[in-house]
Length: 117
Image 1 (tube, rainbow, N blue to C red):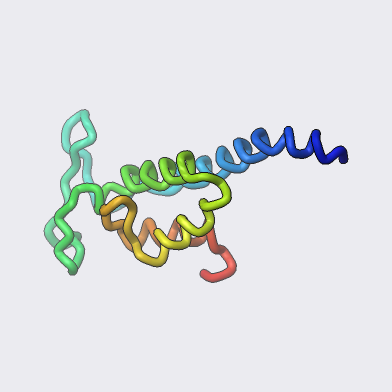
Image 2: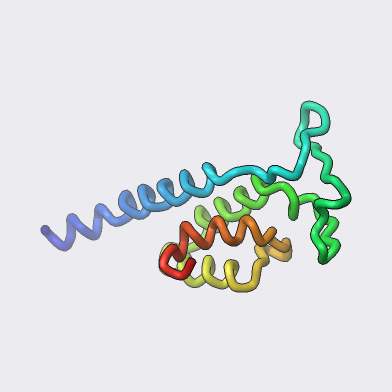
């Protein structure tokens, strides 16, 4: 293939790869331990389902909100830094100061690092 044409096609390839990753993240399940409360995005969590670490942040229990955080990372991180950023998040369990639920981390880890799960 012509190197110039290949270089010119890179943005389209990167866009397709990001879209594929986004689809995988969007299809991850919501937390089974939350119940919708009303017609908005509010929900309830049983006291017995709270983290043993007593995490009280609503985002910690709303897996779809955490999926959106990962989508933002995928969309906004330069492609040459994305692997390092994702592995850092998976190791530390935090995105922009928000703690990520261990179940979400494990689901994303299975997508990002399937050989290590």
